[in-house]
Length: 522
Image 1 (cartoon, rainbow, N blue to C red):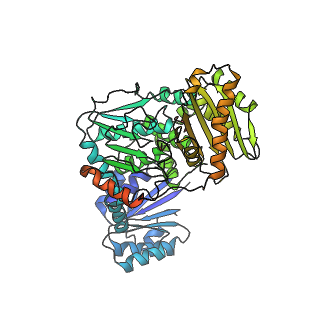
Image 2 (image 1 turned 60 degrees about the vertical axis):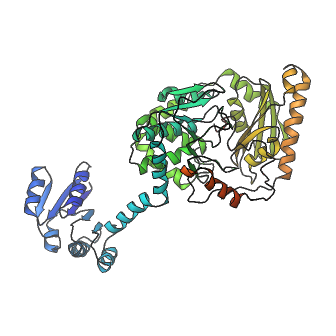
Image 3 (image 1 turned 90 degrees about the vertical axis):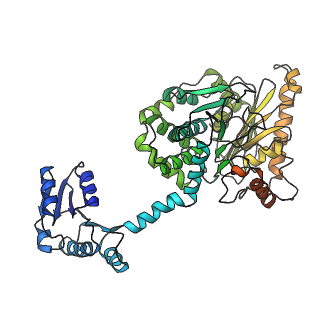
């Protein structure tokens, strides 16, 4: 059984005792303050009066596995740590260095104790966390929220995936903490079986918008998991945007009062966890479970574009999340239409080296394309898959990559940007193509498959062969968090400095969508 010994009294020692007394094992306290010891005894703690720097007094305590040296006096802690090292050399020693400790005292504690809690360093870290770049970003977000006059519309991308939905829910929670009511809105459909289970089991309240919906009733608009109105959502392109939070790499500068675009993380949910933590907002079971699932899905179970921040966010969320609900979300039934689409993708696949292309014909469930592209990627020696199908005169494309330097998002933009919209990540992307002429072709007409093949396969393979694999970075400086109250000048400056007149190579890429255009994250 683990034995722990706390030396001293005061606020830190009291906090340690309160925490440790709830854990299994023996707990003892040795302190020179008789009144404090008497109080601890009345509370059922094995406390003794004695000098924590006296080796003889230490020997009278039960042999401890760990010792916390936690008096408020630095000199006492140095002497106590040295005494503990002499009496109990095998014990783990945690020592406290008060803010007033000298450099020599900190050095002495560092040489004697196994771990030192430095009050000065903790204070510095706390201030840096709130006053540094991250702190500035958080304060700008809350200031922007407080400026919203009325309800806030938080808009996810079309056909939202778990990352977009969870991020929107978390932002609504932050808005509520600042006194702003918010609605979580989306265009399109939620058809993937896991995504439907995700929304239903967590009982998220979402508002489905019709194309061209008037948001005039709202006092502000926020975009999550995408960054431009009218691109991968049903908003008019000139919709004023107050807040953008996204982890997809942008192709063009984004105009909003507050902008947080961090493409180094694997999920937008990770960014929202960062805000919750800095604002000391504890997520509810539903919010934590949603954010955890969003991170897991967008990083493909921590195997794709994952960062240290994603792992840290996960570690924070796990104690608050419901593992049972996660299991239920991940085990929904698959529709017969989805199974048929996957089967057609496997049957009609074409191989070009390590690339598999497959047209599945008429679609009833667009999310089935993503599942088919994932399934084909499991085939031996395949590094890239692209699956496409037709619905309501529009060709929908889903692509996946693994173990290659190909940037799928940029490749799909090059292939289809001029005839539709496309975007996504380096290893996961999507596109929508509306040629117009396909509406006049009967779905059973054999020429339809040839037309689609000519449009999709040839353009994609040509784009692959001509790709430079360039990944765009540095579109924004580190201190840029939106145009702010000054409006366009800051944005114009950034555009001039970062984009310049270098031929504007993005201008011929269609609408420059910066996300998987069909909600193809999942």
